[in-house]
Length: 100
Image 1: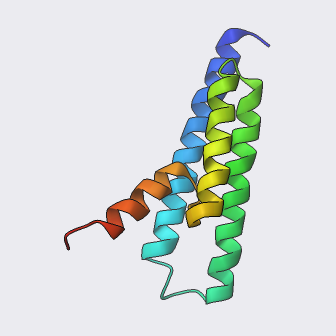
Image 2: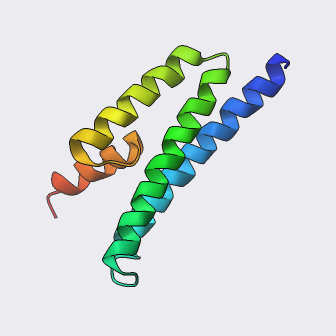
């Protein structure tokens, strides 16, 4: 596999993580009144699994150590505060410490 393909793969993985984070926020804000609680729980677990899958796929890129750190941080944040991704953890912190 050439370096340009691996760089493209890294960009695609980052876009995937941003998409997972966006889906997590959409499910929190907009789907909470539309879908059942059990379905939201299932969606949350699926988003966590997708995030972990993207992080594991990142281990095959040139930035292995960065993806390994991302994987460890993601697992820690999921266990500690239930965040789907580190970006979701920032959104949770913003909601908690918002003056509004």
